[in-house]
Length: 95
Image 1: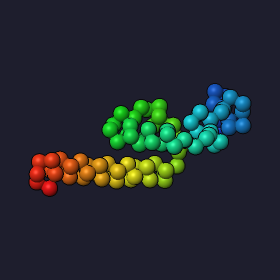
Image 2: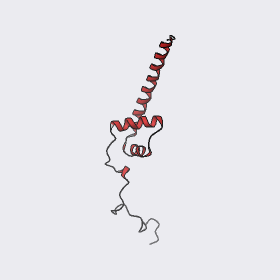
Image 3: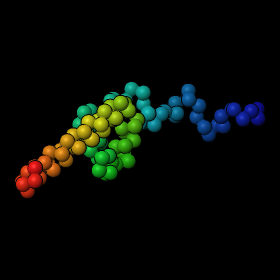
Image 4: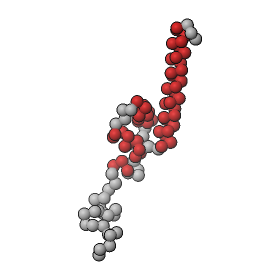
């Protein structure tokens, strides 16, 4: 009876009805849409990602999706900076 592995009456066992998993950990939860991944990547890049969205991303998204989105965002960002610098230098007559 004093077995420490036994659950106390206050703790529902996994088989009991009151022991559902938290919402973000449902195995059948849908994958994030493209726009959600894009917005999450942009928000994370500038540091304004909400805790709710971050938890949603970690619970339902694939790490590969977010890594690819981050790499793609970084590449586009760097290329945009290069183009802007070239345009500015050409306008100043130094390009």
